[in-house]
Length: 391
Image (tube, rainbow, N blue to C red):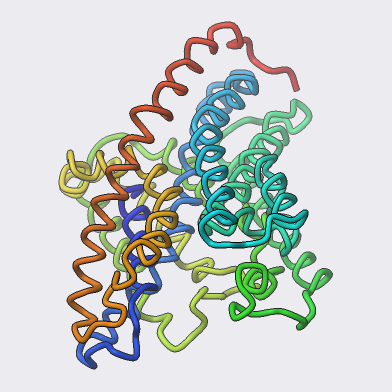
């Protein structure tokens, strides 16, 4: 699932480099569908909620204390911060050295807001650097990291009585509902004005168009659906059965169908309550697949292979570095992606292959030289912080 999300986002950013006006009519629909690869962001959020909540559900069902918040924080910081800070800083430096943006208080303020994971709360800082657009989602996700254990504090609270499986899952549905109410309040209470709004005004104009429908509370609702999926998956009998293959396959088809059904609508796929990426159908489809794939007989072995494991392993590096590569290429080679050539499709295809190879190389180096060493170092520090947290 992580590999699919990674490739979806990469294809999305590659397709953005294609001049749609010069596409052969026979390929137009395919490129438009691929353009909705930005929905991979929702897949990432559901998957993160699923994986990070599993230890909480297991501890809850066993009657154990809340898992250590220190260990939780150490693991999240070790996994996200080194790579994010490095890419953020490179994106900041090239914004005024290569792209000629003025090094003023606005540019520095956005970088500082991103560095401290606070850029997600206002359209002026939404994109923390000009040189790496996809970094906007990292502060959004870290907000979900904070809200997840807060939600579980309610489930672990002794005054709630029974810790049997069903009440906890139903209570989590209530947390999702509360997040949706919070999202609605944000959207209705903090609209943006029309001055300088729109992608024609650059990153900040685009952010002003996205917000307030793009806000951390709404994205937590997506994240929390993944957490609920983990709560369901942990109580499903572990025996592999063919029925899980059928359900998982239907869920995958339902999720994939959200891309072509979005044709003719907003590129962001605004759906219920204005939440992007075809909410709730796409997140629910991903959640159902995550619930059932581990118990499937055929799909588990088919989809979990060495290639998908490799892509998943380096996916974070691929995500945070792809935009830097894709925006630098036209600067270094003006004819990149078929620009100014007669064979636009061929030029785009060649540049896309080169860019993909470079991006995966950098993503692999990022994981091997930066991310993995920090993760391993952090694990050595966990033994001192394994005592359960008090509520």
